[in-house]
Length: 423
Image (cartoon, rainbow, N blue to C red; front, side, top):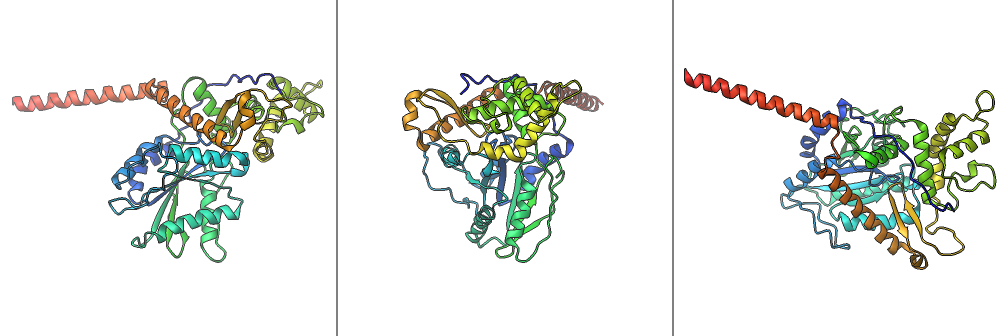
């Protein structure tokens, strides 16, 4: 086990917010007026980073307009809030964590409980679209909401989320499950982010009761943040192909990937089978890429290891195979003697395990650790917002220019009015 796992040096987060994302974000409040259920998709590997907090304001107003108010967060096991508010309008928010097979199973239940304790107004659902059982369960959830509200002629669902979290794939699977007989693939899908650029036409998911849905473009945050926090967010999203290819160099992504795989299992990280037998866990990215390039015979002229090519191969391996291998990480670190160590689940949650906690390390303790991670994330985001860390320098200059133009226009109009009044 490495004595310590150093955090890699990461490049500043890029900005990727094309026009179709801006357009959809402006359209969202109007869409919500005819929406009964919001399916918000997130990536289970990034359960906190794949939250688009720009949606929160619009969703909160949607709930309030329909007479829903968030229950107290201190009650962990409170009954789920009714879907229908005092206004008689449906207002359901289901947070779906896709790709559950790519995170360790032992953390799913504690994380679901931690989210329920923190956000009791949201339903949490973990799924993998290659598992028919998960598709049926989510389809049954939507049909149950429709049947509990027979006064509605139809149930309208809006699917939202960050780029490349699987929105179109989900809707194709729900349609195939809910409509009898063979159904054509209704929506195009791609492993690259940004394929869906406009709101889809209404897609029928169920005949009886009638359930319809819209697919929406994946929307990135306009600015990922300053400093180390923003840099880490950007690298995480790039690793799951949530950011346009080419905005990051592969060696930076590989360095962070090594860090996370070591955190998930410091004794036997998922990449060890790629290296020569007997190799111990590595923390230096250049040593790792040198060993990997030689192992794969990726050599330049003169026998020099091609580290860039090895880094590209390593990232592709993780996306296609390695994440599933990393999901086999055990609940406890395999060590001869109990000792304090750093532990993690997914790419977003990590915590310290004291030596005296190892003997009683179970799902209840993991849940408490996860609740602390979620609370810490909220505090950091609030602090970042207060310090202006959620707005880039370019956006700040643009806003200042817009405010200046607005003042000039107002001043000009005031002069015109004064001139007319003096005539």
